Length: 155
Image (cartoon, rainbow, N blue to C red):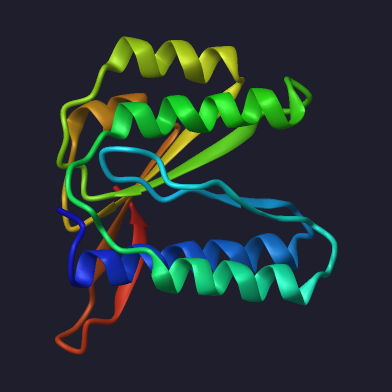
């Protein structure tokens, strides 16, 4: 369901988040997904231009492959958190989606609690009440004009 302009805006949102993490000197992890999560890509918090370049290439090459499994994507992100740094601090998982999927709320709730993660959902041209309920923050990308300028707002 994330084809065309939805995929373009998902990639643009991921790049904006990368730029913010660089500015804040925080590590950045990204994992695109469809029916299966894609390869995890990490950019360390220290200045390393080559890893940023590789991430940009990775983002440019990502194509939607059909199918959506939001539950699996969130569970894998929680598992990544547990594997990478345990339970040191609260982590934020930012899910960029159009919300077109049925999710297992109890399973997601369990994994978020286990990994001490907060779910921040960024909706692109969609809505999902279950994700709204589970999310620490629920944001929407909205069109501002006919030139397709978009803005992320709290929904």
